[in-house]
Structure formats: C-alpha cells, structure tokens
Length: 119
Length: 107
View 1 (cartoon, rainbow over the protein chains, first blue to last red):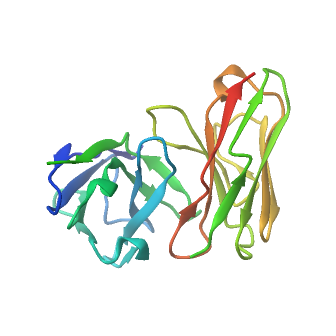
View 2 (tube, rainbow over the protein chains, first blue to last red):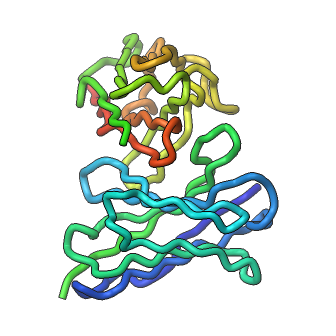
C-alpha cells in the first residue's frame, strides 16, 4: 500500500523559496501511470491544485502561481519535491502531496504539512 | 480554467437525514468529477470518482450522479461520522480545480 508523507521547513521568510519533499513508501515512484501531485489549503479555506509530475518527468502547473512552482522527481530516493519561489504570506497553507491515478483521482494523500510564511 | 461551484456552502442536518448537495462546472466536463470528504486536521478522503463510482471501502449510503455541468452527492442517511466538509473536483482539464466545499454541521 503506497504511503506519502510531506516533509520540510514549517517556517519560510517572505521572498524566499519554500521547499518540500514527499517520500513515497510501498511502491516505486517511477513505475505505473501516475501523476505525483502537490495541493495546498490555506487555513479555513478550500483546496488549490499546485501542479503535478508524471513518471516520465512531464510537469503541469497551475497558471495562478505564475511560474513560481517547480516539481521534480528523485527516483534514487523514491520521492518528489516542490519548490515555490518568491513566497508571500498568501502562500501560508497546509501543503499536501498526493498521487493521481488512472481514474484521475487523488488517492492516496499525505497527512499534510503546515508552512507559514513570516519574517 | 474550469470553475466548479458548490452549493450550499454549509448545511445543518440531523442524524438519519437524507442530504444532497450540488456541484456545477463552468463548462461541460462529461463525468470527470470526483467527491472528497475532509474532517478537521485530516487530508481529504476520496468518496466518489467519475461522478457516480463508489470508491472501495466507502459506505453505500454515499452516492453520486450527474454529467455535463451539474452533479450531486447524496448521503441517504446521515451518520455521526459524516459531519465534515465535502469537496468536488474536476479532472477534465489539465489544471485540476476544486469546489469551495460544503460543510455539513449537526443540527
């Protein structure tokens, strides 16, 4: 059973780069037809899709992030990562990693990690 | 981007009630519509995929319907563990989008 768990700093200063990783256990990140995905949720608000990376390395991003996001795969560590540059307080949120499968659904999800942008 | 709009934003109901909430897409998305349940402090959990297919392990009191632009999620008999926020999500366009959520509260 595949499991995901986000990790990274909980506090990032404004204008700096937010960096998170999502190690995957119970399966290989480079096999199957999956999109490895990042989603975020500001406190008390709804869910926002950030972007995804296919097992081949192809990426797609939410245009609302104005090219600030980069998602990458590290097959040697069986994990994928998110970098979001030039962060502001508006980027404060719980960040989730998830797998999108061939039914086009997000399942499973990581437990989420809170990232606060503050000086 | 395809917008998905949920209604109502919240509702109050009692255990045993039948509840229905809706999701409307800004353009036709066929049946590329999924439903998730989220409880406080937890990640969302998949309930329904492809508009009407029940995810394995999800109780049969949950059902989904619709196609095109209008979709519904129904809970046939609300249970205490069903008080949560429900989100719809479209997977028709590359940029995935979620509705703003419907919070189900205890009356």
